[in-house]
Length: 88
Image (cartoon, rainbow, N blue to C red; front, side, top):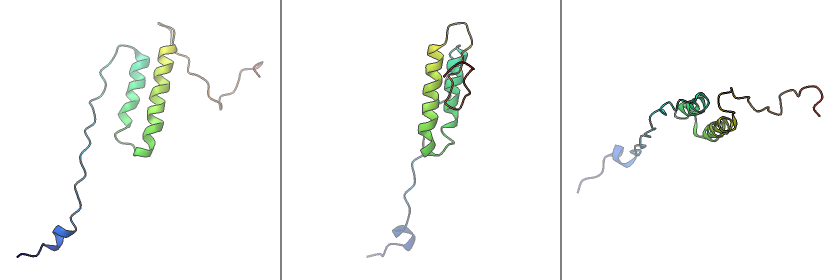
């Protein structure tokens, strides 16, 4: 009977390669295309950051849906944005 080689006992399993989908095809809508373009950074980012990236894509797609056709989208204000005078 042959003893197993030392390297066989402690061999680390190979991690499976992740196959990312191809980049999204242009839709013809610049707001949607910009939102989908954010997905390009997911493969290179650490997994804990994926949720934030996907939330950004989601928010950008919502802005595209809310935009008036033919007009540029107005980004939604964030809590850090200053309010115009008269708003309280």
